Amino acid sequence: MMVGGIAALLLQMLHPAVLAGVWDHSNVRRDMHGRLRRTARFIALTTYGHRSEALGAIERVRRIHENVRGLLPDGTAYSAADPELLTWVHLTETLSFLDAWIRYAEPAMSREDQDRYFAEVAVVAEALGAGIVPRTRADTMKAIRTMRPRLRADARTREMAAFVLDRSATRTFESAPLDLMQRAAVDLLPGWARRQHGLSSSGFARPMVAGGTLVLARTLRWALR
Image (tube, rainbow, N blue to C red; front, side, top):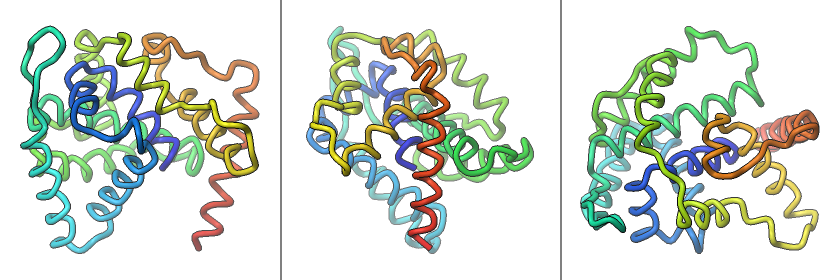
C-alpha cells in the first residue's frame, strides 16, 4: 500500500490542478504519511467495509472536495469536484496500487483478474463524482495516455516530490524501510513520469530494491496475520 500510495501521489502531482489543490488546501507537506494513512483507510472502508460505512466515507470526501477550489498560478480556476481531476486521481491510484500488488504480491495475476479489479473500483470513483471511468487495464492505460498532454512539472511539482521522497533524515533502523519503499515507488513509476519529475530509477540496484521491498512486504503480511 505504501509503495503504491507514494507512486500515486507522484503521478497525481503532475496534473497542475491536482497539485494546486494539494498545495493550497492540504497539509501533505507537513504530514505526508498521514495523507497516505487516510487514503489507505478510505480504500479499506470502500473495499471491505459495510455498505453504509463505504457510502459514509464517500460522502465525507465529496463534502471536502466541494470546499477545495481556487486559482492556478496562471489564473485558471480549479475545483477538486471537477470530474476530470477526480478521474485522474482515480486512474493514478488504481494503476499504482495494482502494479505494486502485482510486483510484490502476485506477479502471475491474470489480465482477467486485473480487469475485474478496475471494474469493481470504478464504482467508487463514480460515486465520488469522477467522469468516464475505465473498467479494464487497457482502457486505463489509454485514459492515462490521453491525459499526458495536460501534465506538467515545475518548481512546485519538484518541491512537492521532495516532500514525498524526503530522504534527508539520518539513516536509522526505522528509516531504512521507508527509504526502501520510496525507492521502490520511484521504480514503479512509468519512465515518462520519472523523466518529468527529474527522477531516476535504481538502475543496477533495482533488483536489490525490489528484493528488499518484497521481503519487507512479506514480513508485514506475516505480522498482520
